[in-house]
Length: 463
View 1 (spheres, rainbow, N blue to C red):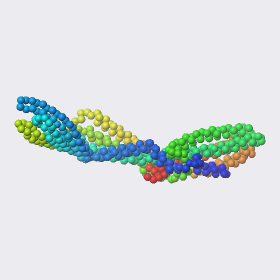
View 2 (spheres, rainbow, N blue to C red; view 1 turned 180 degrees about the horizontal axis):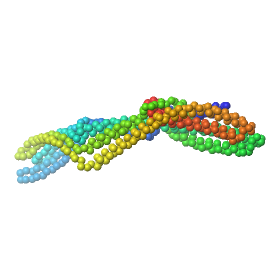
View 3 (cartoon, one colour; view 1 turned 90 degrees about the vertical axis):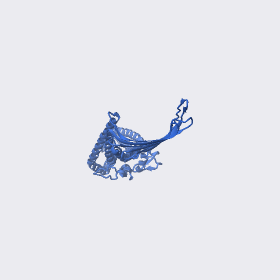
View 4 (spheres, rainbow, N blue to C red; view 1 turned 45 degrees about the vertical axis):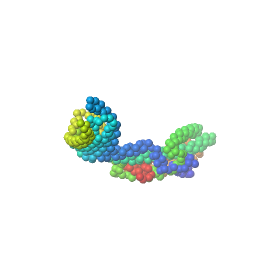
């Protein structure tokens, strides 16, 4: 009976692997894993990139102040009996371009020139100022394309945020799975170690019974074969357990002992009927963003019809018989038309945007299909697995009791060793199936929780 209790308790209370290591709970392991999850970090970087793109596209008052110093030396020589022309100088200029939300562009440019040395010049400039206005009338009409691109970028940013939230859920799921896999394999090692001791005891009993003529030689041979088989199973299980532990330690940064993860697995998960999925939200916003980007790109294919107006003022000096001040003002306005005969780069941009929209539609359909399929199947699956787990302890207890009685019968020669072995293996397989059932239950619950955005269940903490 003590062996029965030991086997049942061993399933739900993991053994200490490293006696001197501090226990690490699954909730403590999750952030250690996430801090090293490259996929999660890449998703967060993409979110930051989407935010930067949104800031750029949201600046509808795109301003640029360009200070352009330029040194220009010009020497002009013209000689006649009464006049020598020679001129040299430099200039510095600055330009301010201001865009507006309606697509209008305002431009101001100023230039200051300096003349130096030489004889009097025939003409030189002191100042020049230009103020211009342009307004798109067809392509990007009243800034429509800019606003479409801004809306598309806003949706892309929200989609990236939702995708990061979903990836964080998947990261928690992966972390817990790694922890549980290592725990389950260590439990399997402990179980097989106990089974090997039972097999060794059965081997001695079979040999003793054979010596006392209470059993056949074939039973003794079967006991030897069973002992060797369990030795092999234990060696294989230890190798698998070591591999799982090494993976766990690589993230934890140290050797650890397990804290009981069963209570973490058995926590209730919310069975929702309505979508609450970050992934589904991301797919929906990705589609809306792709639709907006396609519309914005197509609007740029139109012919360009722009109204423009410009005022320019210039002052300087001009040489005639004497040195005179020079001033000039000009005003011009008109309509500029750009007819795209063919524009392969713009055609390629439209094709690319259309392909992105088609891809976004496919992703949304697939995510929606997956959600609805799981929503239909999960309640019954969860109920079935919970029922199996509820019956598990009873089944293990019954099979262990059978093993105990079968051993006593085999020991006194009233049961064939093969019959005892069949019952003992049935108990062993039942316990091993219990470990797999724990993993299956976690996989089912965690997949549903990731799809429906249940952060608290997956990660052990709330957002």
